[in-house]
Length: 284
Ligand code: SAM
Image 1 (cartoon, rainbow, N blue to C red):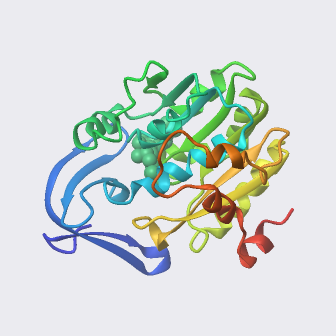
Image 2: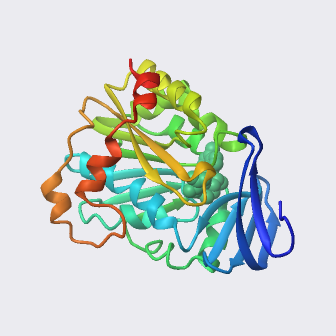
């Protein structure tokens, strides 16, 4: 909802909060079979995409989210080769995954092709790896993809989805988590964007329960700043198939062959630290 012609505002009614970005103009808007996608030119955050009037991605801050949704899990896994991304239509997570030379295939399964087509036009730098021979872009429901996938066919599954409503609701259920566990190889890792620790702690605690009941051996969350998402404090929750998620390949991080803007070994370690309220609500 725009306050007036010069501001885009996302209202978080459940928390009596709102966050606004000053805009120059609306560049595009369309209703797809799944959602309404809007593109704005902002005064200070570059280009902005919203879906159903919720912030998705902007030029200025997306590095935080895309780096933290990919590198910690990839550097926790011993040797990730086959990666599945559910959602991720803006392609920023795909680009980060493909920075890892050991990854031999990254399949992105996004339900709404229009998100990617608009990202290719308005966020070309996020789509820089879309033509990498290791990349595969599929435009179907991720829930069905996972249900139909072969057992033990992936090393890492990234759920880069919208909030748990509408088409993304089914991505936060125990049944879906069980399906993901089945198609992960031993030592595999699942990671899901898990909303705000400040605003959505109940959801995060229930996600821990669902992942534990689904049979994952370890569940750990990463916390990081996210300027345009509700509260500005975000999380991603990892679940391991027979692997301790508190240990990661620190030397490999220090010797990584690509640049990052936010992620490094210290950030990785710090992101795993649990605030006291968080620890109390998720302890087994
Ligand atoms: N970074 C954003 C965030 O955290 O809100 C999300 C990135 S991306 C834009 C989220 C994508 O998830 C959307 O493009 C949406 O179409 C996709 N999505 C939602 N439900 C899905 C499903 N069941 N299968 C595949 N993609 C889905």
